[in-house]
Length: 354
Image 1 (cartoon, rainbow, N blue to C red):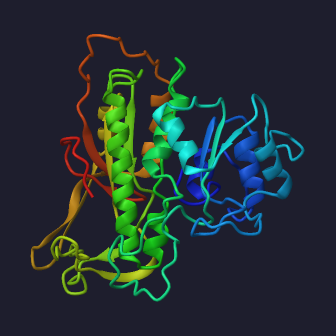
Image 2: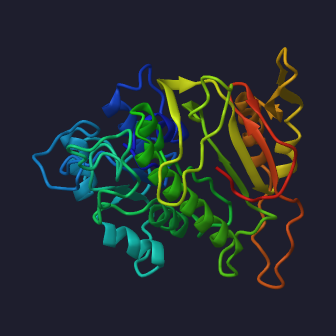
């Protein structure tokens, strides 16, 4: 699931899609729905709504007309249903919230296509605004779009019913779009929403009425890349951080580009297998300049190494949590970092940081 289009790169990759180009949108979305890999798909790309959640003439950018009819009617003329039970569409926020709260049973295959085009919040109207100074939430949020927490809780309501475990990818995808546009206010909004979703998932794992606990569940929080956002003095002081300007104000900052960077990204892990991931951090990101000043973030690993390990961890036997007493986690939380060449601090607490 994601806060941008449901067939975008990250959800498509986690959803088992295969294509020669990310531009093959119809092919990618068709495979995500029809391959039988997924039981839950969520994101934007609704043909009938614009970026402000307003009805519009259908724009079949991500679905063909036949695919969308299959999804809305339960038919299979466009072949979207694939093996198993047909997909159930939930697009209104109250429908999704009802599944998330348990007021409505979760269907066997749940498609949450948010009533928005490119993003659930980040593309809402900003006519006349100054992206360099606009603070978060200056423009009202769309009440028609579910939060990332509501999406995640609805997904967990569907996926947690079996005894064989599951995986769930939850992406705050719009932070990438905001940072490409050097729009810090909207990026902060997405950070806030993602952090709230992580907190909700942690609380769900620790609830006594779920089959999850830290002995049978692994939580990974990371990013696939960073952008060129630094502090206001970064042209003079390498890698200078953001400057705190007080509550309610944008931090002091400077953008150096609108593209991705190869900077290190954080990697936080907690639960079953966390120590095996922390053990991947067998290199160190450190540099000392001619003046003797030291830069870097300490221990580091690589995203490829993490990618090789995760399937092995997923194959480990899963045991539902005993009803009572609740066992303590056998492995403490760990923190490292990963990126195409990413750094990591020493193993430390499970505190979420930005």
